[in-house]
Each structure stands twice: as C-alpha cells, then as structure tokens.
Length: 187
Image 1 (cartoon, rainbow, N blue to C red):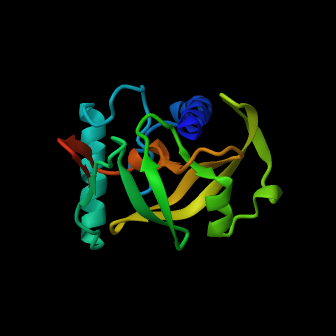
Image 2: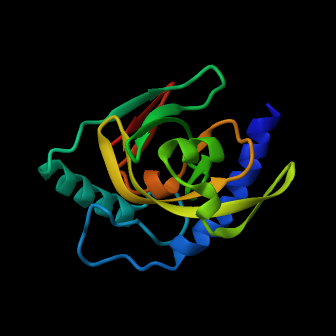
C-alpha cells in the first residue's frame, strides 16, 4: 500500500514537469497519428476541439488498419491495469489518467532494455520516501490491445511505485478513453 502512495507522489511530481512540456506545444495544422493534443488542461475527452482532432487521428489510423477498442476491466483495488507491449516487451501497467507522462519503474525499464544508468537525470520526483531521480526517455512504441502509439515520452522513476503508470503521453493520443461501470475502453 505504501508503494502505491509512493508511486502516486512520484507521478504528481512527474506530471508537473510533463504538463509544462505539453502546454508549450502548439497544435499542428495537419493531423498526424503522432500528434499530441495540446492546449489548456481541461478534460481532453470533453473538449470539442480535441474531440475533432482525436476523431481525425482515429480516422487516419483506421485507414492503416488500426485495431478496434481495447477493453480493460476494473481490478479488485479499483484501478485499471493493462498488459502493454512497450518497445516489444510485455509490461503490466496501471492506467493513471492523472499522470502527464508514462512513468516506468526501474525494473520495467531495464526489462525493456533501457540502460537506466546511462540516462540523464532530468530532475527529481518528490515522493513520500523523499526525492528520487527521474530520468527521461523516449519510448519507440506502446501497444495495448493493438492500439499502437509511437514515440511516447516517459520517465524512469527510481522508486518502488509497485507498477509502471500509463499516463497522458499515451492516453492523450487516443481517440477516446471512456469508463462505464467497471470497464475502461481505449480507442
């Protein structure tokens, strides 16, 4: 339980850095599947401009044969988990819509093949256990149920978060993220 609180504290610190980076980006005139939906920080799933951009991205991905929706069931601890293929390696992640970027545990980053010690420390994440180094990395791809997003910004957190977190650097690039009852749908 302490590990989850520690993880949440790390994500909050990572989120503040990630939000600053995303906020400075201007939306592109031409819609590309790798476009990050930037702008103010309201709920991107209900914002009309973002919905239109997400629909255009989804349509473009559909022409390339993108997979259908991925359905995630709520776990006993009330969270949603997904088996993600990150850079070709299966990693169990907890969906965290409040996290600005994907946050990997050191163990998961090393399993993917990332040499964590060679990454530059991009700051620190303040956790309940104190400050821990945060190392930024660009992931080649994250695939959840056939929904592939390429070039996803992530941070490796040197703390025991319990599980890696799937944040907005992946989620905001989907056409939709919906929760109905105990089912989360990613499109």
